[in-house]
Structures are given as C-alpha cells and as structure tokens.
Amino acid sequence: MARMSPGERRQAIVDAALTVALRKGLAATTVRDVATQMGTSSGLIHHYFESMDEVLAAAFQQAAAADLAVTTAAMESSIDPIDKLVAYLVSYTRVDQDRAFQVWLDAWAEASRRPAVQIASVNLNVAWQQLLVKTIESGVEQGVMVCPEPEAAAWRILSLQDGLSLQVVAHGTILNRLTVSDWVARLAEIELGLAQGSLEQRRQSVGRKAVGSRQSAAGKTP
Image (cartoon, rainbow, N blue to C red; front, top):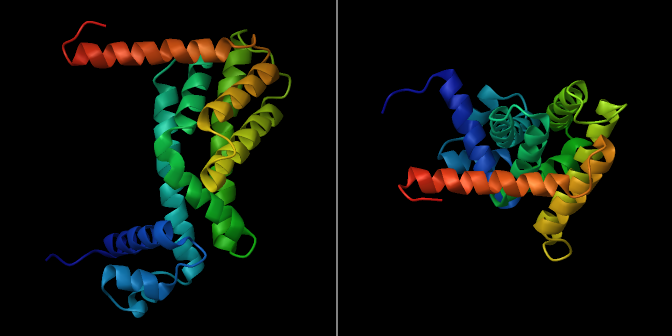
C-alpha cells in the first residue's frame, strides 16, 4: 500500500472522526475512538492535530460544507431569483439532510465549550445566510422582491428553517417536513413581498420540470 501524504493522513483522520461522530455524537467522540476506527494509535491523531476539538471541528466542517455545496449548485442552476430561492428551500429540506442536521445539532450543543467547533459553526452559518442575502438582493434589484433589509430577512428565514428542521431530526413526531416547508415558505413570502402560496406554486413547477427531464433522459414522454 502506498504511503499516505500528510494531507491524505489528515483527511483519513477527519473521515474516521466523522464516521464515529455520526454513530456516537460529537461530544462522545474521543481520540481513542478515532484511532480505533482507523486501526492506528492515538499518537498519530495528536501528531496531525493539536487537539480533539480541532478534529471534531474539521469533521463538522466537512459534513456541513458538503451540503452547502449541494445547495449552492442547485441555486446556481437557475437564473431567476425566485427560482434560486425555491432551489434553496427545496435543497435545504431534503430527506438525506438528516445526517447533516444531526451533526449541526451536536455542533451547536458543543460550540460554547469547544472554540474550534464554534468558529466552524459560525463561518458555515454565515455562508448559508449569505446565499439567501445574495438571492434577495438580486430579487430586489430585478423588481421581483421587496425587502428593505436583506441581511436581517435572511437571518430570520434561516433561523426559522434551522430551528424547525432540527425539531424534525431531534423529535421526529412533533413536526413533519411538509409543515416545515410550508411555514418557512410563508415566512419568506412575507419577508420578500411575495404573494401567499407563490413559492409553493413555483416549487411544484420546478418539480414537474425535474420529473419531465428525468423521464426524457430515460426515453419516456412526460
């Protein structure tokens, strides 16, 4: 087997930490756990990372950034600001986001005690908020949205979305995804001067186009 470079070794440690954290939670993940997952010694972990906090922050960063990239790509596939907003809302509430939301839940719980995790959490949260800000500013410039405070509106939308989505992941039975989607869309409509129900109509339209594209790719007629 080829010898790993320092970068590859660090990545292997982060991958192992994330695997353990998804199973046990960030708070319960230890250096020994990560070493066992890799089949190596704890000394190797300490050689590449100064503290376990840094390892956990890197694992959280990797999981959360991957979903941010998926949402960013979905938004960039559209030109219209409202379509971008719909892509953001739809991508944010995917079923396969549960893993990332669980990591977020753990990270927020640990942020006040682990500075490295806190820094990663803040940076990623701002990155999500800025996706919304840019979309809102574009919508205002094009005259399809009305919003005097894009920065504040983005935080309110994101905060409701985060809170409700984490409720779904943490509790499961109190709220469902459809309710979360409806409430967040309604708040966005209010914040951005959009007609009630307009985002849901656009979402359904996007969904029908996606289905049609998949059917065409499979050689079927929509």
